[in-house]
Image 1 (cartoon, rainbow, N blue to C red):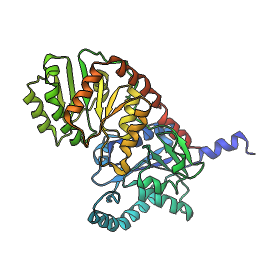
Image 2 (cartoon, rainbow, N blue to C red):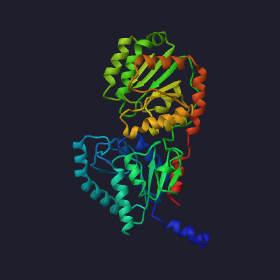
Image 3 (tube, rainbow, N blue to C red):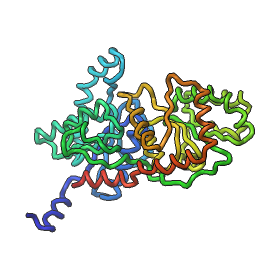
Length: 379
């Protein structure tokens, strides 16, 4: 049995470099940044961070705003894409695997965390290969943010030394004794908020960093059925459209005759806590990071899962909240704008339903998710 001093010395000499692989979406990447921030807070000058992402992903814009270096792989998807896209991805794989190997051998991390996205696969895979060959002493882990694992993580989970999960009950999908339920890391600015004023009743609509055309279409189709409430001032709307859909959505509100005091339309909202704080109800997708933020701020929501999401994981995420009474769900396909308007009015007129969702959504909040991942990585 080692004495305390021997253990402390061994830990002090361990390589405290962490490579975080993945991205493509803000949800994957922000979780990685939250972990990176806690890692550096814990280890200071002894710690090092490297992000490896995909060319064309949001990481190219987001990571340069952080203190962390970024390397890029060129790689596409294999899941739910055309045959032509699959062939292109297979042709890209050898180069991506080679570059991932080069990044690993140059940076020589003591720890790898795959957070999902195309670039996660080659890095985690080659990390495990190099470890097996004795060329790298590294602990290989992944973060599964969704209620149902994506294709990449279903494969990588069989190789990883540890799997961190955002939802409970994920053990059946991964090898025995590898799963640690931590919750999903989110921005530190997301904290519990008291209920927003009910008058005016404010609805915040958003679809992620790129917007959501399907959600925007439903809302535009709902507007004629909400016109009276908007114009009389009892219903206020904040709408993040995404850059591509901004002009079209703005024109829809202008045709309604609304004023800037009644409707705020933005391409992108940078200060999300301010928008959350003002909102009585959210209408949004059901991505893992979005749900983690909703739980953190304690807001009622209408979740509209992306119908084309891989393995329909957004609907599975949403159902976890719905089954707990923490949200309502609205299907994008097969429903009309007038149906969405009717649901909005129902909730607008039912303070008890809003209060119940706010009370129950908090059970999904895991304030220490990032620190739990850091602590479980470094053991």
